[in-house]
Image (cartoon, rainbow, N blue to C red; front, side):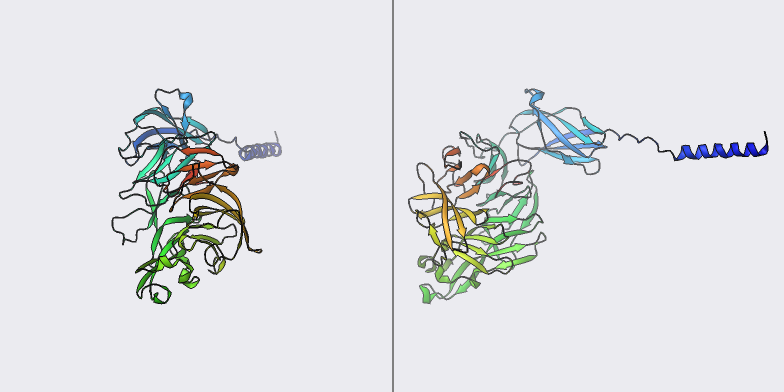
Length: 468
């Protein structure tokens, strides 16, 4: 063979080697998830929940399948999947039965598929002896659960009335125990010292406090209502107290007047918006009987909501009015009801009075509990407001049968399918109505004073995807 031919052969071999090296290799298969350890711990604050800890590799998320040991595995419940933090995950199990044995298995999900861990067993504890008990039922309730404050507890019940979640507060949760759109609960707990500036607290589904929510400018937060935003900011009502000479309007010279301010604070607690009633209302907008003593409860704000246009809607009980406030200017857009009413009411019923729980249901529409507009009958009422024409039309009205009166407290919640959940406050009735006003669900008997009742869809994400 000539040198020329030998050289070409060598070049051809080199080209073949390079081509093979550049040829794309077959993609490697993702590694399957492997669960190395699973353990479960009781929740010392709630016998109906537990926390499962899982160690796993090559997984994105983990869930827990569980059932009562004497039930068939086909009856498994499954928790929502929780994202991994490194190679660990902590998954709550909620809504358990007391004094019951459970068998559970972790299931890990990853690019390489899913895998089941070994089965372990766990037994729940007994319920607290002072935990309230309920019975409930109806012909066609919405699916989900109902949240409210009860004595020393914040509780969640199912449609049969069984308590499926609870949290105990040393002095009680206060008036409002609520689920928020961020999937957490809030309460403004009671304190043994009424002068304490007790903040609201936010806590997760295992009862862990995640943050406290207070007012700016040294004001005291009111226990009636609070709104959390997706960015972590929040709206709340605050007591603003001023000393005023009210001798010219039927009061005393050194009256301590309490008005309801409204604030918006950032997630870090910075004051973003402050609205004061002293800049927009007159002391004579309230009733004479409310301003004759040394301590004057002037406006008594008891509910707030954000309208669809981003402005505020606030209920001032002692003024008997619903007020719309511009954000961020603070200007009063309109006043409905009370002595400074700017609207013509289109309704066969008397104008609302002593109202609670204003909730926006659509553009220009809201609901309230009308406590004593008719002194012998409290009602849930829906209004459609035409701001340009200055008319307010009553579109729905629901009352319990037989009728009840709650001078204070109570709530309304607009629900899917035209449903409405109503608490009649001190009258001790909580009922769900369909769009025709028929009762579809109720707590049987007298559940006690329920300041606010709220239906939620999920124990694992309370408040997410539901109305306030």
